[in-house]
Length: 282
Image (cartoon, rainbow, N blue to C red):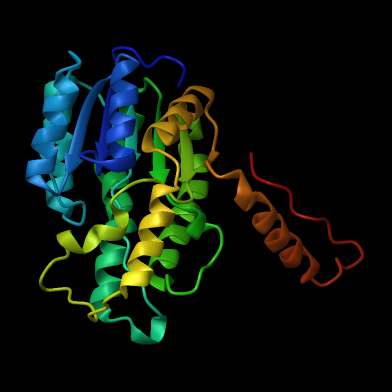
């Protein structure tokens, strides 16, 4: 989607981190931007900062797990700004721990936000994006944890692997409508995702996990050494303009991905004589 100026973007998880950085970047490119977030105070502060740059900004307090609220958000944005051209399903939370220690609350909350939040965004906005006929783009935020599984992150891995698969299917489904799709797979970014427990619903309890001071210091160091959300947002804007599907932010993961793919290919049995290999669709 080369033309951004004057068009409308909707971004979930837009009050902080990658979502806020994307809002700044797309507003700077001349888009009308609606941001949604579950934290009302953070949302108000983010809207104020964005409006200070004389951008057309709308803030919507939203729990992405709520289908009805997402449908209402789509109607509100369309009424305020007109047809939506860019949908960024970005809201996400992190709940970790070994799978033999996870609770149903861990699973329900993680999948509810990270996976169902994406589904709800697509259900609410995609029909209108296809119908208005002006083309557009969808950015789904996954993670390197959606490409490779990491111990202690089972529910998070499951949610992000699902987002990658959904995005691959979506790209084929909406190509006819001139709607591009990108899946964002960052590594460690300087965000508050490791502090997600502040927004955890009371009806989805998890096992109490207290980090040692050493582990807390190690985690803080890892986050501090991550890349900035603004760097990620720059790549996202370029990917939208270029209709680039994969958005990888951390080149140090490339060898890990290559080794995984090589191991997968090596595990296939030989192709029987007379059977043609499948080729990618499109």
